[in-house]
Image (tube, rainbow, N blue to C red):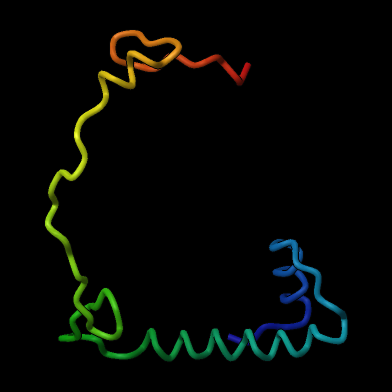
Length: 95
């Protein structure tokens, strides 16, 4: 797919981007190249290719999911200005 200068101007307007007039043709050429590459990639046969979450095939270091803090909810509820049924009451800020 090849983009024209008018296409680039429309895209820039929709994206609320300011593009200098002398750069429009350059952007049209670059964006057309990107779209052509995407078209080529869409035509590739990917049967048997396993999807990856990360291109470097790294493992996430995980820690044990263990509680490290004591439950202080009741203490915080007693020092809060207003609570009701275990909830903190705050002033309304949006009408």
